[in-house]
Length: 323
Image 1 (tube, rainbow, N blue to C red):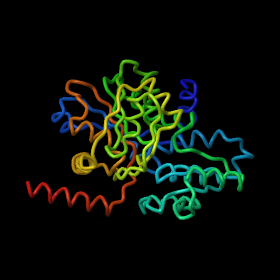
Image 2 (spheres, rainbow, N blue to C red; image 1 turned 180 degrees about the vertical axis):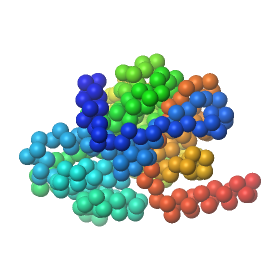
Image 3 (tube, rainbow, N blue to C red; image 1 turned 135 degrees about the vertical axis):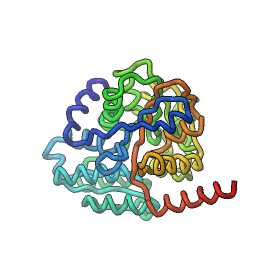
Image 4 (tube, rainbow, N blue to C red; image 1 turned 180 degrees about the horizontal axis):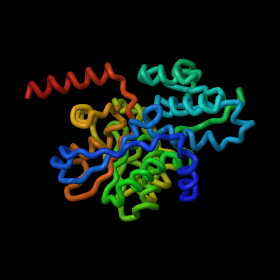
């Protein structure tokens, strides 16, 4: 996997943005930590997912790639595959749920992809994507359980370590595990002493359960505002890397995600989606002790439904007034 990371770093160079690293003195004062935020919310199509999609699709043999690709996703991977396919001039079919945020549906279509809703045809998303792959000759590009997807995702944390040097702690959002396993791999290469901790929504704790039991645990689709982390299970590829290189997995409730989004918008001027602030929420809420440590915080995506965020923040403001 280390060789894959090195190759991915060169492959995405000049295609993925080298996203900025930001700091917050306000947060540092609150937590006693020195924080560095890797802002993948400012990546192309608004999330780290572009890295893995590009790294994977670029390696498909040209004659095969020309037939097109298919993916399944609730939003960010969908947009990433659609954008990369557009760049290569190939067809893209994306299997999505009808409940995906409208902004993500619109963006996926805007990149030229065909959307197929799996919850309207009576098939699970994996099965539908595999059937479309067979019937249309499309190459399946999975959202996380693939070594090249992981290697591409790893380049974000690799850049963070390259820019800021050693860290004591790295906090990473966790859905299917592509970003967490990739970040842990990058930490192993760049800073072996760094503790890597994954952060899930409280309602979607399949990763935490798996981490503690030592076997893959599967849950029902969780009800959480973190739509990018509404996964039912990690994958074998990501789980093996997480077991090997991750120190812990913690969870945060949705209410803390709203508070973290408010902080990111008000104090850091960053538009971040709920899944994107999982790591920040863990730090702000004290779910992870960071006093006196150098802490990296992965901001995984910024594809927010602006109208919905406004409603959440209005509710938070009302709650503050009541107090």
